[in-house]
Length: 240
Image (cartoon, rainbow, N blue to C red; front, side, top):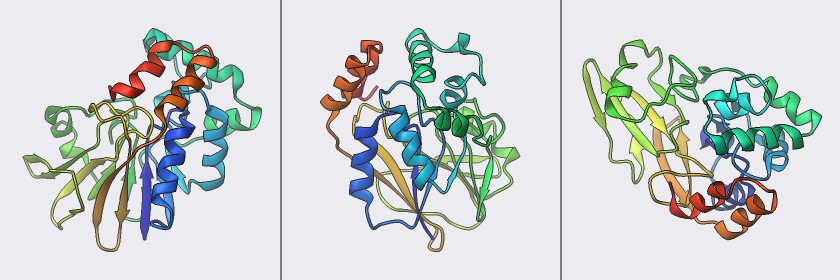
């Protein structure tokens, strides 16, 4: 099975549309590691798409925050303002959909989907030490995660941890565990503003990272015209 794996779309329809256009014909099912909404100005369009097209999804912290399932006090000011705005504009059907999203890990074939980490859906796995901290608790050979907005892949075996060169097809070897982040569709934080995503061929056991250029200025205009914090528009062009 060939999967398109996306995460952290954050209501950025222009970025998502570019990913779907570039990925057309190259996958059979779509998986999502959470955060459909928050930050961006097109939450309903993105959630409508997810309801119709995403086969398996886990909830993200912004999905929870935007429907009142999580305390927004620990969100930064811009994130909190966007969450309140999103909750006000979501349709009843989309509010219900986001409210019912499952908490990870969710099982797909022999791998798992999570938002943050396998142990805590809100935990950030940013550095090697963060990843090493969950190594002893993995019960599947492959985990796909999001939340950090960094496109990364890690290989673990016993007490060893290796961050992989993740710039092209990556064959997953037997006898190892892998934690793989497809990156953020909407808001990458590795100074590359292009939308990030990945493919996974579960038969060949090969993961391939990908990036798609999109019309950032249109996405920025949508955010500014909606009255959302300007920071959320400006950072799209910086990839931070």
